[in-house]
Amino acid sequence: MTSSRQILGMIRSHAAGDNDRFLSIAEEIAGDAERAGKVKVAEELQRLLASIRSDSAKGSSRVTPIAKARGELAGLIRASYPDDVLADLVLSSSLERQVRRVVREHRERASLEARGLQPRRKFLFSGPPGTGKTMTAAAIAGELGLPLFTILLDGVITKFMGETASKLRLIFDAMQTTRGVYFFDEVDALATRRSSDNDIGEARRMLNSFLQFLEEENSNAIVIAATNHRTLLDPAIFRRFHGSFLYGEPSKDEARKVLRNHLLQFDRDSIDWIAVDEATGHLSHADLASAAEDAARDAVLENNGELTAALLIRALEDRAALHLH
Image 1 (tube, rainbow, N blue to C red):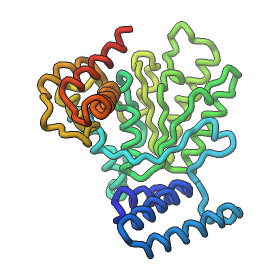
Image 2: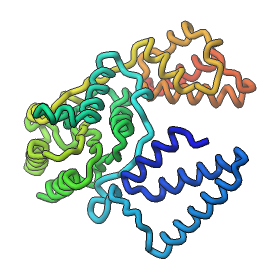
Image 3: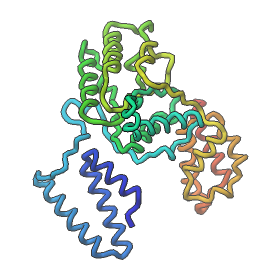
């Protein structure tokens, strides 16, 4: 039976023009139908897919991947189509409320526009590494059925005068033609404060160009910039955003939720979570997710598939030890 995940995936890939992903999901549905004994449905789907792939190979595919970066943009933007949703996030209640508000504003933009209002579109995420900034950007894109465009700063920033500004202009021009979530990770590389010791001429021009493009940007795209080092940012950049979200280490309750979310295939209720809580320490969301996966592997390989508190605690301690070196 076709799942809601598959239906959503097909709609999103069709809207984004991602032909390969659309066909991949269709093949998955055909396989599910065959395993469920729906042989005729599976055969018809396979015939249709074979025909479409044959046409595509001959260059007659009618699906145009509008969200795929081409030409110079190909080295500046990476497109993806997240399946993440808000339910996948583990955030503080305040931060979760802010993120849900963003999604609702864009889902119900017609109601806002009827009153002469617009949804907010430009946001700054700041906080330590691994605390959920990138996943939030993906979840916003996933909830709204939009492609996520991650800006590849190593392709944008060059040592040649004026070239970085030209590449930034290409990205901001793309926002006018292709709606999506545009994610500038580690934005401090573009927007370091002008009073810093490395304030050379090209760095100033790069910052000024970025500030100008942010100020003038008026598309329907959502622009998200993220930084691990908020204090490095030039003060002028904060005025260019409609909202600023602060991320931090998870609380004990949030840490437990992250671990449970990544251990769905195990009996989680039999675990001594109070003992596990004491081992979560100052680990980030990403560290906790990795520790859960480590413990899951150990449970399968060492303990006949049974997950225990001891295995989880050991994995958490191993992750914490990585930060000591």
